[in-house]
Length: 297
Image (cartoon, rainbow, N blue to C red; front, side, top):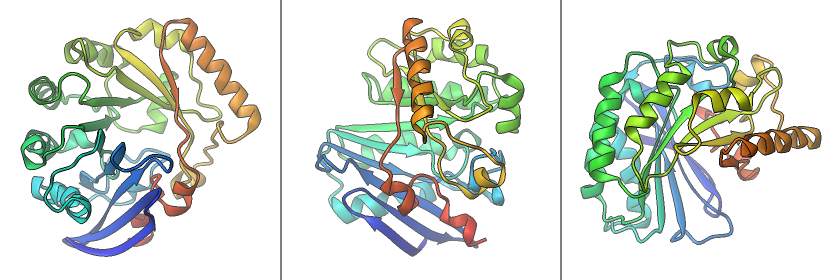
């Protein structure tokens, strides 16, 4: 891995672009601007060389060239960790490693190999891996092994599982995420097998956009609020989102009111909800999935 670009602000986020084989990957580190690193530190890594899913809001799907190996994934984490904690003793209360930068993680079994190694590779009592997925169809073997790894190594709230839904309209979900996916009921059934007492609830993430409805009653019909938590986020400023004419709702005051109403309706049905906007400076840095790599292809 050859680092070719480093940008950003140590107080908020840093974006790294590296050349790997004949391709480019991105990885990120970020911290809360009002908290010391020892309270919360986040590393976001790539799992694939591009992505075959080609979601309408994501620039990672411009070109797909295959999977990263276990060592290539770990090299991203090592690079960031070794700069700050060269002894790999990480005294951070909440040390999140998110498999969400480039590439659908469920398409790469090396992600599971990395998850098995992390607890022994670093001395990090606050380690919380995070796997975010669109829920690809016919990936039972991956999810079964992931469940086993979580139960063995990451109990009592030390794992974050997230499914990207984005809309409760099935046809529009298929348009937005153009790959065979688990149905809502299949995701709900997985949650029943995956969740154990003491775990973090499984996150259902929805980018709140115009023309992509989120119906709280549909969510309640399929998902148990005791197992699932809802997260509403704005649309990141990607080139592909702009090309597709996607418009975020969280950007405007009127949009925020719509989201406030959505949150109240979901809470009335028993769901815990999170509205996660993030730091606006991260948009300028590119750490919010601006995908600098797409400009290099």
